[in-house]
Length: 478
Image (cartoon, rainbow, N blue to C red; front, top):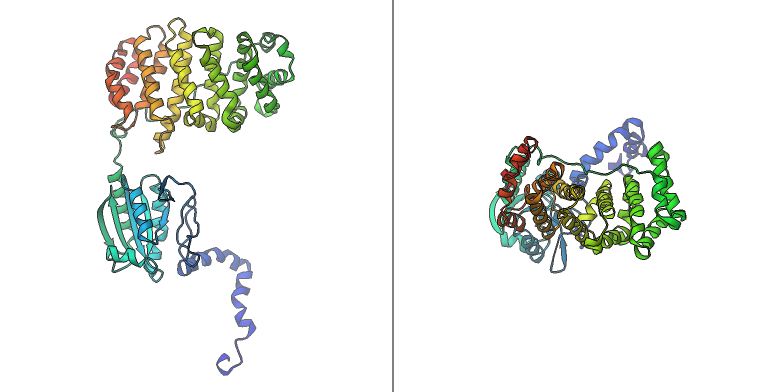
């Protein structure tokens, strides 16, 4: 009918919408949208890959860059693990420079290349899979003519790979299996598996939970030690919270006013005598068993209360009373009940520095084995958090200098420890967790070698059959 000028009837033009309005049409709509997306634009990015429009607003959206950047070159922010859209030689060169110590893949595509679109989802997935290990780049030849000219690309899709700054290989075609295999092999060549991962190490190749100190003392006696400060509403609220949680459980114990309590703790640290600090920190230790409380301290500006507590005890050095030092070590162990705070303790220098100092000083206490055991436990917690990062394929969160300082203290303590088997086990495990999959050319491995770590650890085999397997594992990684 439209051929003779009468147009297409409304019941025909509205037919697609009518079908989509039915329950059956609504069920089909996601599949139809997905099918049409491959024709009209690049496929949607998999979950976990952000997508932002490139600077040129006329450019069709293909893949963007995440805001989580790891490199800055000539003012541009780049992040390994995201598909990057390069439109100029300058930007492409900057990306390849970022990948000079690892590897990169360039995917040459064009807006008029249907086969290219078939491998877009696989390329996005590979970018997420290779996060932190490779740079996956996409170049649209219909816009980036100068890039195509440099690499003499004559067909799309074309893939070019680079390993440590040098061209590795080139191939043409939308073969998803070939793409996945070649990219994974490239990443493995750039990041060969650490030799430790090829060993069988039952203790060092598993996740370890933090050790905490949850025992609640007689609270009325503890409050009495505060004297007049025990009547402060913040002290009473903290005591009542600990008592209720201990008796009825966390669900029946609403959080007290934590801002008031932190102000109270800081006031005691600044203005009260040392003998008042023990009950204050012991109450804090008991409260930190609850991850809601430790989580609050993770969100406190600059972690000021925890940082002030650690600095205060460190400043007392040898004059710190036995009970105050050991309760501070126990309190520090309980900080690890919050995964977020645990990471902050290692990442943030204003926390990690006094924490390592607390451990190092306490490990060398020759008069009090319980303090050495508590310090070994805290060292274990620190090493375990960093160890989990490595097991999960992520970067260390404890700086190498802090790892070296901690390892040196642990080795010295191992060589001296003759009384406490529990303390020795904690020390040895912490050393093993620090060294496992540590960079082979790094300072930590170098220092352990210089200090004779293997000999020191091996000398503890005779201290008990229960330590034999642990010592054997640590010998292997050293």
